[in-house]
Length: 156
Image 1 (cartoon, rainbow, N blue to C red):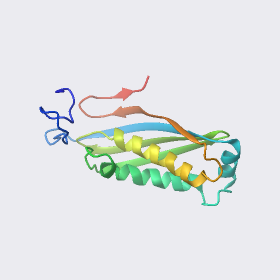
Image 2: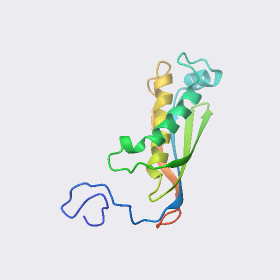
Image 3: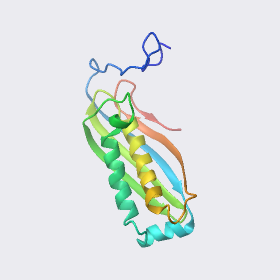
Image 4: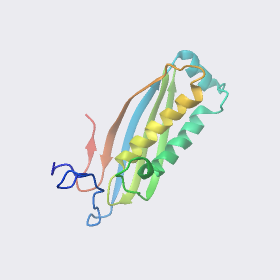
């Protein structure tokens, strides 16, 4: 268990001490997709969803979620986020969310990027569920991270 940084010697969960780490520029990008019927996608494109502008609301929800990740994921540190960019790409069968989060800090922003993408997709579901309750969210994953002691990483 000693290789798991969120467990102490007795196996109990704890928040990792990052106090001795250097402050560095860090960035992470995550993605995910919500698949839906062509009818639901067309309604989103046309701005015909009763609840409003689906992509605008989803973008704001994802940004807000990135800023509040430490309140949602128990062992995440609260971070001074310097940037959140959330791209939502609508096609005929769904929406792909890609979130990029940056900070100058002592720990990475992978969880913030993953949270932003996921909450954006959940918001699309919530706003369009009257049109398609069978929508599916999948493929949520980290695409890249940079900065910190472990350096850069890109998904293969």
